[in-house]
Length: 321
Image (tube, rainbow, N blue to C red; front, side):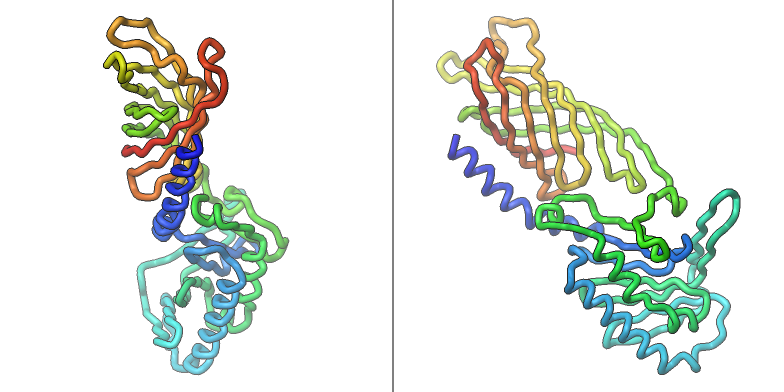
């Protein structure tokens, strides 16, 4: 058992940096609202700790300094955007693709934004939303964003496996906002899942295959709830016969990087050539996805009372979609 647990730990340690690499396809985001109007946002691929806060502040201050030097030369465009890369350039582009954002409440349009300043640093990307240049120069965007970032708590495990942060923050009320307060809707979408794996259970090799269905839910459809039926098979070396058991599992995947599972064994009618694997027990599993489609699943099994009592263990590596 200790060998299995050690192997599980090593695989999880291997999976964590790869899961973190996957996170770079989906950044963490903090959005600041002023009177329910989107005012500023910052995005990055790491926790909003002091180094990120400092970079955000320095990037905005550097942008304001450069903007002050050229503000008189900016033409009076009706629609335009500003882009700034630290220590590189500041560009003003007229009539870009319209980037209007509406927030409606009780049939009234509370906000319409047509201009965005995009600031790119080494770790962060900042967006400032405005109507006139004077707004950018007057508002303290740095302290707004830093105040919001300080409300986020993220440790090493959450950094590696949790869903990307998407915080909305009211600078007037100094609190987090719910999606519905800023006009973002909750979504639901059905999906199917297919998976196969090979692994070890109770120090014996096994293979598993199955399919299921469920729903994706949330603003970004990040939460996944699904039910699967799987067939687990193990070969009994002395007799050469295959032993198998059906597993009905209930799964929750709050992130594309990990999921949790409760599996219940379903014992069917025995056949001479295919005996039930009656010591499988109820399965509690945790799965990480270090690469797209690849899973690593350590599990613990609470053995049935009619078999050898106690807790067995297993681990598997699978592929699915």
